[in-house]
Image (tube, rainbow, N blue to C red; front, side, top):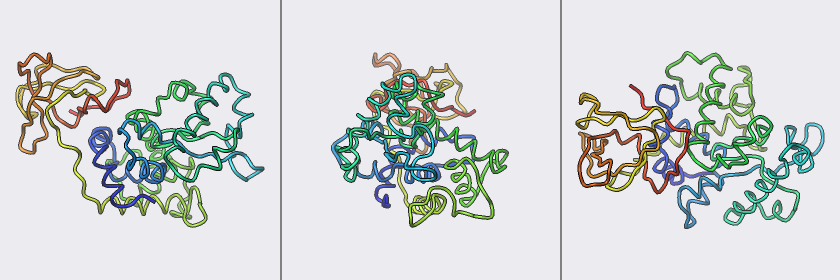
Length: 316
């Protein structure tokens, strides 16, 4: 189970991207952190203590090696086992990736020795928020191209599934939800449905607690952890606003927008500005000349963010 220290680390690394991505939704950083804790907290809480980059940690977040064991026992969704996966188009390619993903992760995370020892075992869940391999049938490129390795991609899918969960329990029009309501949405995220009469005792049961109960516990723990995202410092950054990021004449939205920088634009942060140090003064051409200011929540260090077509949206 991820500790308060683990959660603090996670929020420090990913809060900026999450804050930008949840803008306009009823979700917040602690809610998304709770999902990450439940889905792969046992993985990244170990990986963070190894000498690995943030990108590598996100890429190694895979899991779920349980195969079909009979009716109502073990895995019931595609792929039931190796043979089931191999029976589908490009299933052989996917098994190679899935098997390597298990071996790579298990090299750092104890407890998977038994699975690695069995040549037919492979991982079924991919990314920090665990998109299940059952979706290989409808979206094979997501898995074959290893898009799940990028935090921005796995976060995007998480938010789409949470949006479906909102609709499932009739909260899609809400601009905010309570922590209990979020746990209910998370149950729908996990199972595809929700029964009000069962409360939080729904979703995967590990013999101790249900998925919904764990989400509630992790959310409460995350709310108790104060953690600031890494401060913006001078150096190369990348724009992560899907619709582009406004370059302004000063450090605030009251200043004129000079142009819109497309997603994946690389820029050089020269100085920090604004009342809360959340604006960056930038040099677009890396020629020593200052071009304007951008809001810091929509840029990330270039070294930790390979180009991705799935970006967050700058509001306003």
